[in-house]
Amino acid sequence: MTRSTTRSNSSSSGALDTIHMQIMWNRLISVVEEQAQTLMRTAFSPIVRECGDLSAGVFDRRGRMLTQAVTGTPGHVNSMAEAVKHFIRHFPVDTMNEGDIYITNDPWMGTGHLNDFVLATPAFKNDQFVGLLACTSHLTDIGGLGTGPDGTDVHMEGIYIPMLKLADRGVMNETLLAMVRQNTRQPVETEGDVYSLAACNDIGCKRLIEMMGEFNLDDLEGISDFIYENSHAAVMAEIAKLPKGTWRNSMTIDGFNEPLDLVAALTISDDGISMDYDGTSPKSRYGINVPMAYTTAYTCFGLSCIVRPDVPNNAGSLAPLRVSAPEGSVLNAPYPAAVCSRHIIGQMLPDVVFGCLAQAVPDRVPAEGASCLWNLTFRGETDRGSNDASIFAVTAVTNGGTGARPTKDGLSATAYPSGVRGTPVEINETVAPLIVHRKEYRTDSAGAGATRGGLGQVIEVSSAINADMEILAAFDRVKFPPRGRFGGENGENGSVRLASGQVLAGKGTQMINAGERVILHTPGGAGYGDPKDRDPAKLAADVADGLVSAQAAKTVYGIEG
Image 1 (cartoon, helix red, strand yellow):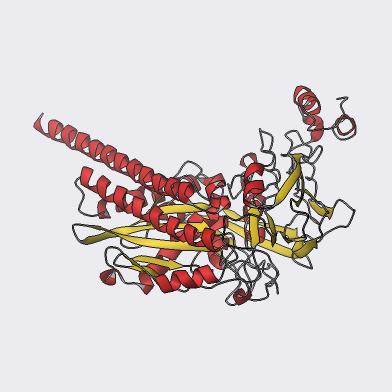
Image 2 (cartoon, rainbow, N blue to C red):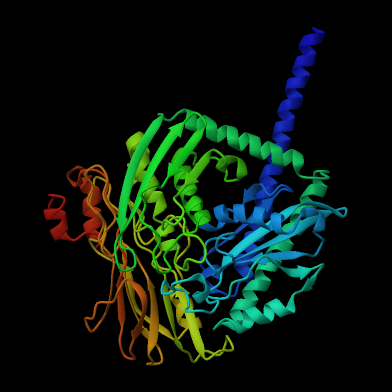
């Protein structure tokens, strides 16, 4: 009887310990979400403030990511997870002081291009270093040729900040801030964003220490090990359910001035999942190359969506996923390669992953989508006085359609895999001299299928002050559309042209003369399954809503609309 009682008490104690750890884990998630919300609400750049192009996370003393904010993008979060390890290598923990802030935008130690600043701030409790808070956001303009793919080396693309201290024991580095202000067309916005990043980490540190006090923690080691071990075990359990073997896929995309091939082999084994991009095209001369950290970030995100969507993202859940690409390929471009528009190719990688997984677990995997963002970056003269500059530079986030899912239609005008929201028209027209004449769904742009793809958009823009302006085009899926799956049809290609009829290139800086309007068609997502198997009621609703034309309903789906 005594032994039975002892076992029961021990079992109850273990269950209570687990519940206690889970509560602390959830509190850590709330800490980093408040951190991210602080960044979003104090940012100067519309792409952060309105669209959520950011990330935030808390890391232990060893640089392991414990939690990430729900608000944020996979490219930022998963590459920031590696950036913190670089910070610790450059600034050993025994040299860190309360009030220090570290900064970099090194593409190979940060998030893949110069426009993303990464900050890390050490947190101290009772004068002891307990962990780091880190954050990332996109800055609209940091000099150079601007946010486009025209550069032929990284030094043409903007100011390059190595691993530096932004603050030393609470004193800001005014020399660094002066250098940043002088190397941007948006000095007020850019400096404001740096302070916003610093404030974001300050809030994270404050909330972390409050949480540790509430749970009477002197360090994060116990909760850190719990998060890592349980997340790792949960992912390995999901991998154990998958068939074992190697599956291959390839995708041809536009490239800059010639097509590129993304080639992959995915191997599922008892010790994890490996993705190897051997056979992928060599790096480009222009700024569409992808550093390995960004390749890893979006590959892991694609794997996570299918393999372990319910397991939180952290060092433990990422550990079973391994990614490799030949050095010198477009997916592992070494310094000093131009990388400003690395998102164009990097955000295609979940679709490459899905093409492999569709052979292993076909009932889980969607068709291809527009994938990469269709960000509209304009630059020219301005009559707005809010940025202490005579030149404006603005990036408006726009999106195409996502691929159809096995049991649901794709999402229209939705950023996947980035997760960044579209910039409201009113914001664009307020911060820059632009008029958006039209922004609407593009009928028949979605690939047909038993489940159809999401629709792209039609967007028409001109200067509000009748002045020349430039478009820094960085678009893909113009020549090679998203591909359908299991009998579904391809999504529609994207296109860029002027209202006068001139066709513009999908990549590169080009002039829009005063009085002209630029018209963009963003790509539609591809379909899944035979269009003849689509539910007639759903097709009728699509025709009634103007998403599918009556003609397409008849000729493509074989049903009178």
